[in-house]
Length: 327
Ligand code: ATP
Image (cartoon, rainbow, N blue to C red; front, side, top):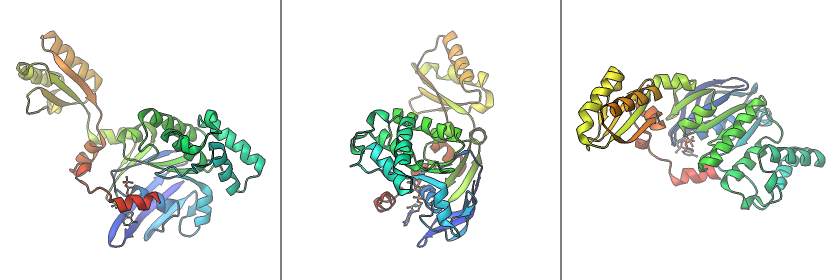
C-alpha cells in the first residue's frame, strides 16, 4: 500500500532523508520510530505530497507521489503533528466543513459528521467550540477530520505527542479501530511503547536512515531482554544479591551497581519470572528491598543498542524548525 525506495531529501546542504526504503502492506499499522530530527516528519511530508523528494520513489495506494500527486492526495487522510482544527467552529461544524470541501452533499456531510463524532467519543461535545476542547479531544477531532472520506491510507504524525496518559490510551483505541475497518496506517512516534502497542511492523530511523526494521518482537529480540532494577534496604545485602542474580539468571544478567551500592540493575531474559524468583530468594534469606521493578527497553535503550549513542546526545530541532513544521 505504501512503498518507499531509496528516498532522499536535502534541505540545502543538510541531508534529512538518506535513502529510506520501506514496504507497507494493506491493513497494517506501520510505526516509524525515531528521536527528534530523525526524518519522520520529512517522510510524512513526502508521502503526503507536501514536499518533493530529491530522488528515489514513493508510491501510495499505487500512485507515485511525484507523477500523480492528486491521486495520492485522494487516497490519504493526514493528521499532522499539531491538531489542525478550526477553534471557532464546533466539532460538528469542523467535520461538516471538511466533508463539504471534499464535495459531499449537505445531507451526507451531516450524517458523516455525526457518525464520526460518535465513533470518536465526541458526541457529548458536538455543539461545543473546538477551542474549548481538551488536547485529547482536539486530537481526536483532527483524526476524525482525516477520515471523513474513508481513505484507504491514513498517515499520523506523532498522534499522541503532548497528550496525557488517558488521552493517549483513547487515541490508541481509535487507531486500532481504524485498522479493523481495513485502513492502512503509517504512524510516526518517538515512543517505543506506542510503536510496541500499535504497530504490526516498526522501522527505527535515525539521521534519515532505517537502522532496524521488524515486528516489535523481532526488535525486542535484537535489543536484548527486559531489565530488573532492585533498590536494597541495606548495603550489606549487595554481595548476596549479586550471587542470587548469578544463580537465577546466570551469565546473561550482567548486573550493574550504582555508586550508592544499593541500586542494582540486571538483564532479565525471562522478565517477570526472573524478577519473582529473585525476590523470593532475597525474601527467603532475609534481605529486603525498598523498590523492585521490571522495565522494558526505552527508546534510549534502543538507540544506545543500535547506534551506541543515546537519543539525548543528538542535536534537538531548532525553534525555527518547529515553527516551520507547525505552520
Ligand atoms: P521530530 O520528532 O522532532 O518531529 P522528525 O523525525 O520528524 O523530528 P524532521 O522534521 O523530518 O524530523 O527533520 C529531519 C531533519 O531535517 C532535522 O534535523 C530538521 O532540523 C531538518 N529540517 C526539517 N525541516 C527543515 C527545513 N524546512 N529546512 C531545514 N532543515 C529542516
